[in-house]
Length: 197
Image (tube, rainbow, N blue to C red; front, side, top):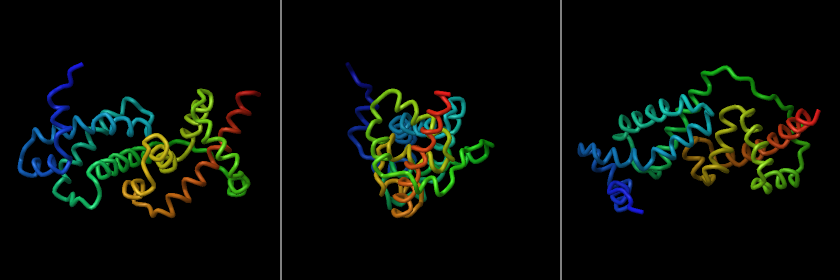
């Protein structure tokens, strides 16, 4: 199967090369970056918002912000991390505008969840029923919590990358991921009770 010339071109050059070309006024280089990052950015936004109708508009907003802010990109992190940060912030901002109710879980309940139960929950993610329950549970989390879980488990971002994307400290990311996993277990338990009643 033949791949398009633009895909082959993207593989040939680094993001840094394209950023420099864009800074010199080469709009074709920006098109290459859009093509390279379009699918992952759309995917991330959809996973966070769960609204297919908003995904395209938010993705376009992300790419406009990338273009406008490109002069400020200094390379302190990778370009992919930088664009993910913009997508993350754009999606979270949009989610905060909507009035959704999130499941409130008491602190004592979270503290009572065992590490073994959390490990078992995350270890069975290949099972269809478990994946379905996890997706339902993630949808009941507040936007900032669902974003962290999605970045870590579905986007395979490391803690260091999540730090750069979210602006949180490494210890905060680790602590929050730990607590969110416990919350997911509690939410899934409640969902299962409702399903079997």
